[in-house]
Length: 317
Ligand code: SER
Image (cartoon, rainbow, N blue to C red; front, side, top):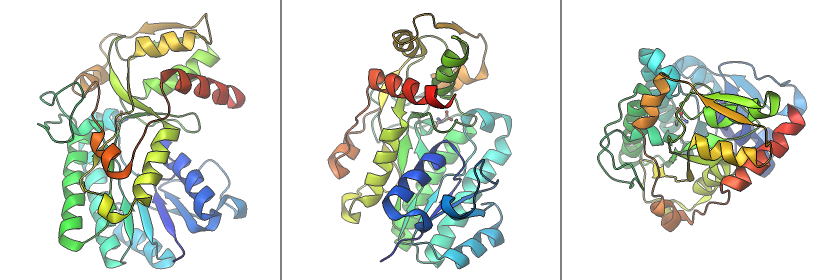
């Protein structure tokens, strides 16, 4: 069967990379990129199909489904943790109604597979902080976190109730050079590279020893494609799979950057609201279910991430 893959939220940090990766696998015309705004690249011919989509507008979304009859849908449009605390109702509405619109249309249009990202933000202050297991106490205290947790329950529900093949990953903080993150708590781990190259200094909004699970974008995209390629019977978890990456602190990231840019200096801001969010999240994650079920294996450790980020960013900054 020839695939038509609709990516919603294609302009974001993950979407930008995922569209490129999917076009590499399925061909340019098989991937319909879509977002609420025009992308910052030309959408004519060679760059592939693009649609303006607002996931809160059911009619607009339906027209895109009718026009393209997607066989797979990736729903990436969301408001992240830090912006979500500034706009709690909008974050809840976008993250929840957007998901439900897409799940309903996916059932109606008999979409073969749906991908929806969850996050380490589904865990909360009473979850185990180290090597956080797949199943444990979950008491997220950000709107983003509990919208993702509720979304996971909906995904599992649509699988059980309607047989929709929906798959999901709990991404750690993602580090990549092709696109910037938009309003999350882990954004520091991308900003630090830009500032190190531009100014040689960075004021970090998280404290030096705030450990969080992080992953290089290449690993995250590979995990996503491999989850989506796995035979359905290998997908034992229909809520969302833990994905570990590696546990990184701002201090450790800065000292690895210093190996390449010896004059780089990091300083730390006080009283940033994102600190409390980071403190409520796991410091490290157990992703043994992903390893067992669909053979997940991480490639990028901290030195490899830093080397690759600096090499690539240097060429575009
Ligand atoms: N990286 C996201 C954030 O910081 C978490 O999924 O909000």
